Length: 364
Image (cartoon, rainbow, N blue to C red; front, top):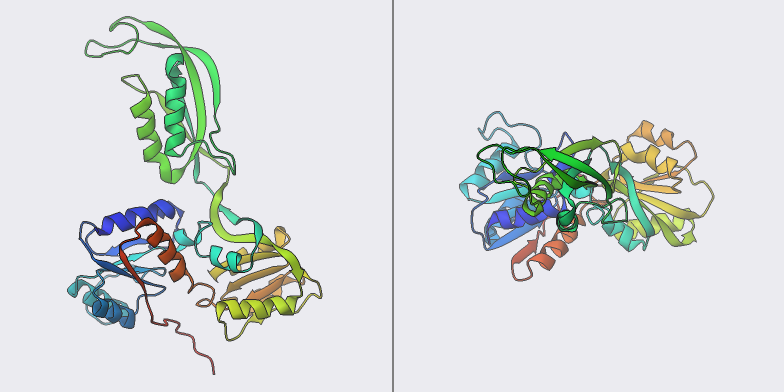
């Protein structure tokens, strides 16, 4: 299998356009055209993980955290990252990362904990912004359904949990083809008026090229007229964090014990108990303190994440229970998420989950 087959699939699930501006997801090292026989899945790329890949014959490492996060201006081996990069290149092992784009999809990092807690009515805590567009095009009446179905098949027309959404309006278009044209209707060099349908539909940014190609392929005109407008609407199908409801309420302390067991946390830092039973749960793997206000606004009883700073605990203001279960602990299960998604798509390919515990934080 080629590396690009795996990366193309992962980027279909978790588009690179979903990653945060500071992130560096995608293929970091390696040739997309290279044929590989196996891949190693990990949370972090450390020297131990790289050695594991070498020992198992893996041609690709799939990681959640990017090895190259900020820019590298030199490769002299003066830092751990530089040494790993140099050795990976020498051993011809490619490295791919799916980080905040993997955080942003409902079936990504946060789905694991939601599943373990059996949450229902799950929705995105902070939907992606500036990621929706409106397509407007003009179609002869005879080809409306052909074009509309093509656009829907390419992924256009989804609004929340509804799909195949569009709006149409009748009108009359005009055009005159030049001497080298081959008009679908009318005659070249003669002004023509045609009864047309104005079709409007929406689509997410990461599908833009696919949508345009579907429009051009299905539209009968030689030159297809269309407009694309950015929308202020939030794309509710993707974003940071998830929030859902427990089937039955539970005492705060009991829920923390359950979370500790599920995640394998040695300790959970938390704010003072509010003395009420928990029903609505918000989660964000890794560093999620930036989502605290979102959790409060959506009336979550508890927010489970990691990496809260001392002063950030004060921001709970007795409105919500913060449960800091650790960065590694709330994210290391992403290896299982990667594995299950990839094995479902490529059932005969050799994917292997790393056995290395990459958590740099130790407890006494």
